[in-house]
Image (cartoon, rainbow, N blue to C red; front, side, top):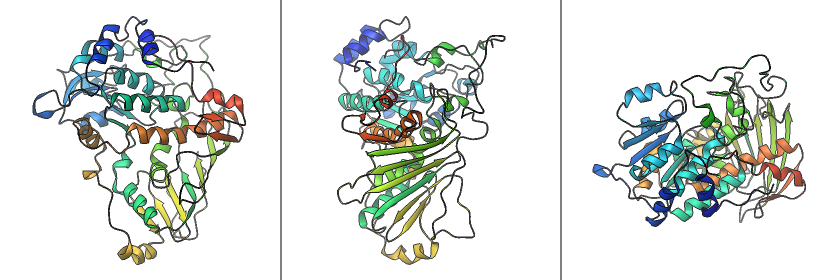
Length: 457
C-alpha cells in the first residue's frame, strides 16, 4: 500500500477539502499558538472539555469528569445521546466532530473520544492538530501505523494523552511490576490470557454473520442518526441496524475483534511489567475468520526474545470460549473465570483479574507465606484508581498519565498484531523497528489502510 505518511502539510490539505472539515485558518492559528493549550481556561482551574461520543461508553468520561467544564458535546446518534443532552441542556451539541472542532476549537482545552475503533485516529489527530489534550478509548487506534503516528504527533505537540484501559490506574498493575522487578516470580517464560469475547450477541465468524443483502429491502436511516459521519473513514455502505450501537466491533472495517476489544485490558499489566513491546513471531489459529469479520474463536501465540535481564517468553491468547488448562497451583475446587491472565514464573505463579484489581500469587497459602517478604510499594499510585481524573491532572500540568500514548501505542500494537496474523492466516515474523512482516509480504497490507476522503486523513 502506497499511502503517503501523514504530515502536517498533507493533513491540512486533506482536511480543507471537506465541506465540514476543520478550516485551514483554524489550523494555521493553532500552529502559531503554544503547543500546550492553557490548562483549565475556565474559573477555578477547570478544564474546558469537549466530549465526542456522549451516549454508551462516552458516559464514563462525562460522569468521571464532572468537576471540569463541558463546553461541547458531539454524538452522531441523537437518540442514544438523549439522556446526556437532557442532563446538560446548556452545553452546545453537534453531530459532526469536524463542525464542533471548527466552531468551538478556540474554547476547548481537551477532548475525549468514545466511539467505534475505526474513527479513533482521524478524530484524535484532528484534536492534536489543534494542540488539544486527548483521551481515547481503547484500543487506541484501528491499525498499527495509526498507533505509531498518534504517539509521534502527541510527542511533538507536548500534550497530555491517555488511552481508556482503566485498569492501568489500578494498584494491581503496579504490584505486578514491583514483584517482577524484585524477582518474586523468578524467571517468567510463559503468560496465558483469555476472554469470553466475542459474546453470543456479538456477531463474529463467517458461519454466523454475512454482509446484509439490501437488494430487496433497504433499511431507512433514522432521522436521529448521522450515518455518513458514523461511517467516517470506512468504505461507504448502506445503512443497516446490525452494525450499531454494539455489533460494529466484530467487523474489520469498524472494529478490532475480541483481542482488540479486550487485549488492552487483559494484556496491560504483563505488557508493562514484562516489557512485551515487540514480539518477533506471531502465530494464530482461528475458527471461521473472513474478510468481513473477525473469527468466532482464536488462539494466538506470541514469541518474545530476551529483553535485558528478562528471559525469552511465550504469550498465549485465547478467546471465543477457548481457555487454557489451569496450572497445578490453581485451586482444583474452582474453575477459571471468563477473563483472566496467568503469569507463570519459576518461583511463583500469579493470577490477574480482568482489570488487574486482583493480582494474587497462587495458591493462596503461598500468597500468605510470601506476603511478609513482598517488596515495598515504590511505584506512585493513582488515588482511587481514577483513570480519567489522572488524565485531567496531566492536562493541568501534573505527571504524565500512566497509559499515555507512548505507552498505549505499544500495547495497542501488540493487540493489533494478532489480527494481522489472523487475517493473513500465516505464521508471521515481525520486525518492529521497520514496522514490517518479513516473511509474508502480503500481510503488511493490514498494518495501515485506505481512508474514505473528507475526514482529514
